[in-house]
Image (cartoon, rainbow over all chains, first blue to last red):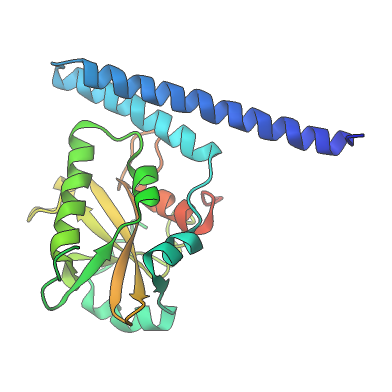
Length: 99
Length: 132
């Protein structure tokens, strides 16, 4: 018998999957629309691009990125220790305070 | 195989899954900028002085210690004319060489409803967006 909590977690997972699928469909639709149009004014192209940006951002909210440890394993790399990075920062440009 | 970068330049490594995730939703000029920057940095690497260190803790609670940013497009122009960026993480490869690993692409100052490149990089490194 499935517990109410397990059922609730399952429902949430299914809802997230559905949301991801819907957003992916919308984004693919926007991409198809864009590629099908041979000529857009700058203003139209900007509107489509902004719509796609927002859809992609919504998709990122509900989906998980590739695990960073797997990424490094596949690339055969390992992040440096922070003290090593700090020792090299004087070779980088000045920080801009943005992020 | 990518060309070996010039001295004082470090190679930049791209994972295709991260690249797909980072560029999903970008089209037209922004995607061209990202693709051109990938081609250029894969072929020639990137110089330290073309990069700026990311903040360990940024204004949007982003945690990007060990990372640097490359303003894009990759041209000789003021920052105001380079509205996008790559975020790269410093790493060592199996031979012990220092390399940059691509983490994120996006807007430095995004429009409403869109995440910044710094928030995207935080998500790639920590698995979720920062909570402010």
